[in-house]
Amino acid sequence: MQNILDIKNLKKTFGDHKAVNGVNFQVEEGKFFSILGPSGCGKTTLLRMIAGFLEPSSGNIIINNKEMVGVPPNKRPVNLVFQNLALFPMMNVQENVAFGLKRQNVPKKEIEKKVKSMLERVHLSDYLNHNVQELSGGQKQRVAIARSLVLSPSILLLDEPLGALDLKLREQMKIELKKLQNEIGTTFIYITHDQSEALVMSDKVAVMNKGQLEQIDTPQNLYSNPKTSFVASFVGETNKFEAYKENENSVKTKEGLNFLAEFIDKDIQKDCTLFVRPEAIALFPKNWRKRYELF
Image (cartoon, rainbow, N blue to C red; front, side, top):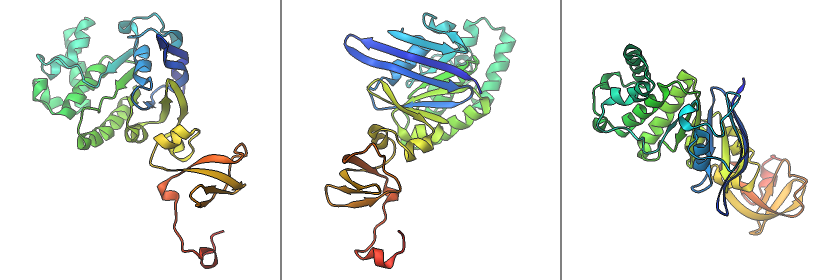
């Protein structure tokens, strides 16, 4: 499968602050790709450069094998869904979804056909003439997504779209978003600080910290095989210990706890930081070696 997006050594500085500092990654066509990181790490700045709302200080953005630096937002094959949704309160659902098509001077009958089809896909066919103010938070979310997808973008950019929803609705929308993306096949690039959103929905996740990408991997590998201490601590629940290596298969924490491991990286000389997932810990009585033949 070919790459639909290629980011090459992308940088953005504001004065002395390096908001995005030499980022490189590719996204395959039709995938759900998340950029996960804490507030202020540069992920929204990165998304706005892809959308064309910010010019990079250096580097390149390639979409569908075409360089995008200098191309205005309305000429790029992308659409952006904001956290605040930016729906038009004076319009009904149908008018909101049709807005972009009208701006492109699409014939009226074609607009009606596309809007009807898209609202069916997001399960809002019965709300065509409802004012958006009458809708629930989840329904408004679907209207915003439908308004973007009806324009058939190559990439849909989503900037923390579930952030304003309550917990129960967020859980529901995670499932709906992933299902919708699978059905339509559009490439989604999803910005979030919520690890559960990224891990549940994504084919791949890029973990961002202080303007740089720490690791790009599948959700499973990020959790089970983190490459940096930041990824280990940020993705999933973990117990952190300051420790030192006793031998090739054993480390000891400064509290005196011993941990056995199948493999310890040879680059670790002595002192180290140990991250242990809760489910990896088993408790045994003091004379466990005599009672349990585990090793």
